[in-house]
Image (cartoon, rainbow, N blue to C red; front, side, top):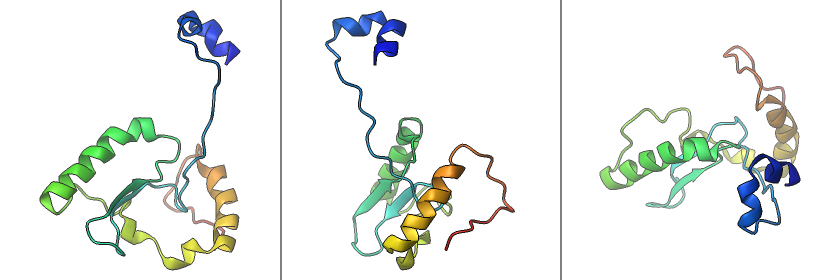
Amino acid sequence: LEKAMNRVPRCLEVGMSKFFCGPESFTPDLAPVVGESPELKNYFVAAGLNSVGILQGPGVGRLVAHWILNGQPDMDVTGINIDRLHKYQANPKYRAHRVVESLGMVYKAHYPTVSNETA
């Protein structure tokens, strides 16, 4: 916080006194989870933006709004659609192993020939 105040002194005038890094929302494959919930009709999910929610949020919001209003997305959602997930991925043991691997991949190059080692 002190470094931020030095970089942007105007912050001293707004009363900011605490910097908080909240919990992250990493998914098993590091892709967002977007779409209508398979379990609950008309319940839409837009989550798992994995540290880039500020960057991806407006686009995901527009996509989901269009989907809700028109009954289908107006772009290919194959890689982010909620229906790509499987029930075994809700298993705590699976998640405990996968999260270690996933977090290590966040800022690495993602090659199409590389497979996850966990699960």
